[in-house]
Image (tube, rainbow, N blue to C red; front, top):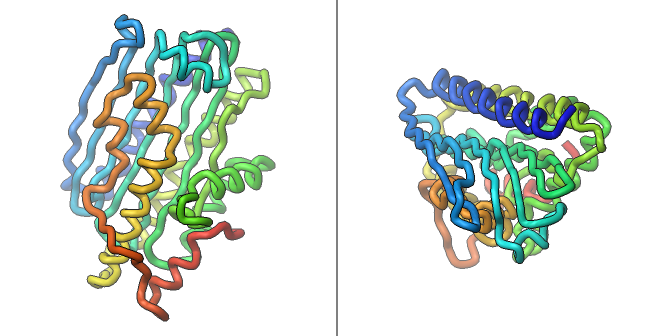
Length: 295
């Protein structure tokens, strides 16, 4: 397969996936409002450089969420280009990135992204999905990981380990932002058609991995202490996204749209000095799961 044909197929795929996820969210939250923005950017040299489609959601079930696609190209800062895997200062990148923050603390937050990048003489794929729950429903964590285990096949253990190590607030020691999932980067087997097929296969499992959990938990009652715990853990989510997330840095360094990049932040969160959940509480149990575990 010729590289330009592969790039077109990938961009078309993520746009279709954006539609499917949007439809799924609307079916679960009928009052959901969606603000769609079509944006354009200029590249490092001031020339037209592509853009994307940002969809920002607010509703009763989904407090705030973003399901975004983009396809950008053109010149990038040569200093930043040296930190990437390709050659030269011309870049093409397309992908889907999503974050969903539910209002019910019994429903987990979820993040996923799938991307393709072409720089000079190299192309590669990256992405994954990870779950941030606030209540210790171990069967939900096993269900989420089970879907990705089947989807990733023999690469699952490596992708899980990469996810556990990456989505970690390293400045706080070993404290993952959730219970992990899968994550991969710089994936290239030298067979473009095979790689596209595999990444398409992975990305199409997002809906199956997350929305059955939403349906199971969305009508459960919760307490003020449940919500307080959720808001504090969202604070840790913010810490990771602003301090460690490579996607945030990539978007800002490539002149991406700032609001579309920071849409991953929750609408509400809390920070308390030396916060810890109450000893012996169900939330202390949940806290113990923010470390690498076999699910």
